[in-house]
Image 1 (cartoon, rainbow, N blue to C red):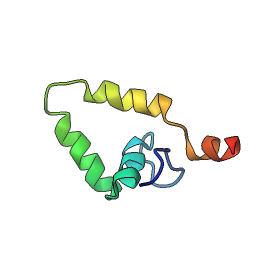
Image 2 (cartoon, helix red, strand yellow; image 1 turned 30 degrees about the vertical axis):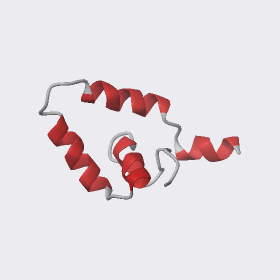
Image 3 (spheres, rainbow, N blue to C red; image 1 turned 180 degrees about the horizontal axis):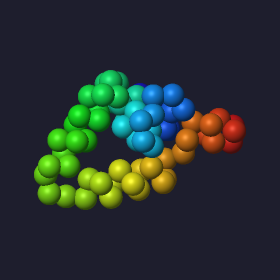
Image 4 (cartoon, rainbow, N blue to C red; image 1 turned 45 degrees about the vertical axis):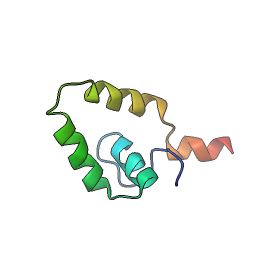
Length: 66
């Protein structure tokens, strides 16, 4: 499995769905569709997305640290 890092390419808003798709081996569009459908259910999905956007390192920042 790939590391959970927001990629530089393939971002639409923050790159969270692209990072999750890369981590779990699915396409980014599939992950975005899963997220949109999950927003119809009660729960903190949007807040979780925002938290992942803030706390997941970006690919450019993660490579600079190495």
